Image (cartoon, rainbow, N blue to C red; front, top):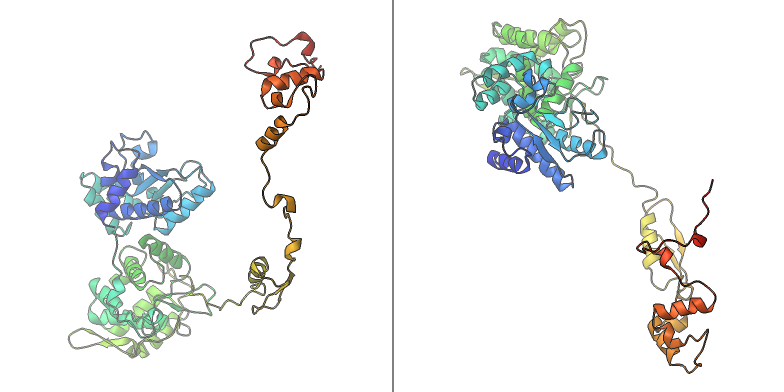
Length: 492
């Protein structure tokens, strides 16, 4: 869907048609994700509608809006309706759908008042003061596009349909897991202002983390922290990578996500100082030592740095023109274990040296057939079997089943033979009764003809057997009072 189509769709679901900016000033990524989530929800039977998108202080008497901290003011949030109450199954269903589209609810679907609130950023704006300040300044210009740019400049939200940065990498015959990301990483580092040797040195260090091809699926099976990816992120940085990937609407194993995350760490995150140090490195070896000891920070970082410099040729080199030249080819296979000892794990790290990493790629074990897999086939055969009196399950399971099949003559609930050719209706029977010459008086002068005449005959019949025929007291529409003799005594 195009941006215009997404906005038109949201406008059709908006509860505030009198506020054109409700959708028109929404961040493109917010509009795209919210529209996609609402399409999925409606397809699943949830009557979700847009309660409010972009708001202005005059629209909402909330002190939170007036304080300038609400994401609604900056086109980065949407409240919905039609998802039930807080904590309800429908609210949870919508929460899962919205989350899968890269939206966040920092408060949770059980929050009594914010369960229906979803936004671009994982945290409320008051917890990211630098981003909030940039958004406030951009909003003062009155141009929504300046606000959208402020999100991107502070790493607060990717643009709509962001392109994976690793798309320039040369894929290996081994498939996605063996994809070679060296070119993408080299170009990203060069784009940050590093010269070819400085970028190469950083890549030599990365080669000790994720094999010399810088595999996005590299993992260390011996690391309980689950070191994963090109930079073997672990701990808080692994969690940050996961959140970053979710924000982009892609898995953490996506190479473009990992390269973009690395860039964000070096430009707006805790690793900004590493980039400045790299720019002062005189050669590739010096840059590799800086990257190993300041960005990756594995155990025995100084020793690991020398090992990575020694094996740097496997990662690559640069030619006389400053272009990157690949070393050894990327590995083939379904997954790439990280080189031994290459995991970035916590040790004694400086204040800015938070160790790196994501979730390890799980080992897929083929599912064994259930020992009861033949039960369904047996029951189906028993119900639909032909003339055989015994149905045997012949499927390959550990517990074959034999079920008796009742003979046709023993079929349950069979109609008696006298009714199998049809049964005369009640009206026909009464008609026959009325035509029979059984006398003029059956009971109290009631004839068969009067039975079929309806209520008058029934009233006479009741009178004939000594029962009062006055039913008016049973009719709620009757205006007559209930006879005293027929009132029930009041219970104490």
